[in-house]
Image (cartoon, rainbow, N blue to C red):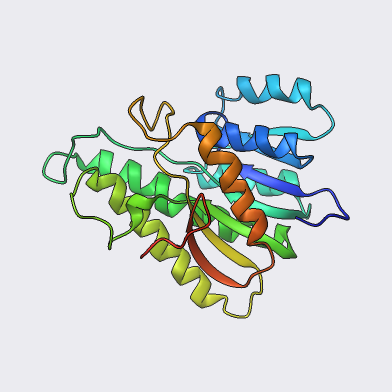
Length: 233
């Protein structure tokens, strides 16, 4: 980010896993962070705020509920940030296919992973400075090109939908000079990623933040992995 100013970040979905690790890494680098979690899930963030009382603020929001997103917007008002990063996401059962998944479960995954992040981007885009960054946590599994085994197909579909919606957002805002980043963190050992995942949080998240810092100021939409490599659509 800018060396002359303290980077300010609004990080949505930071109560656990990758989001919490990203919050902690940003704080270690001197960022000022407003981090969010769903109601009754922010205990770890509140504890972290005791270590960083001057640079971490904790807010509660469930981005699948538009009224809560609107309420957060009202609380933050016109406050400006250098980055908006939307991390919130869920998955269904690993072995569940389109043939198995219930309609309600399919809707839950799609609303959480695709619709809601874009609603957040739309709601808070004006809170991001003209030279700031709009970013969401995607996944390499959102790549249609790379889908050669068909596993995790509901989750894959939700991330592919997220990527497409970000592409539409970019098309509607072609004159916006801010970078739009779709970040693929790799398969990481978290509660969501599972114990068999290839990467540790320490291998993924610092590099993912390095990549976002490197891409600051570049225009257009970019689908990147945690090492800064372009992911095929």
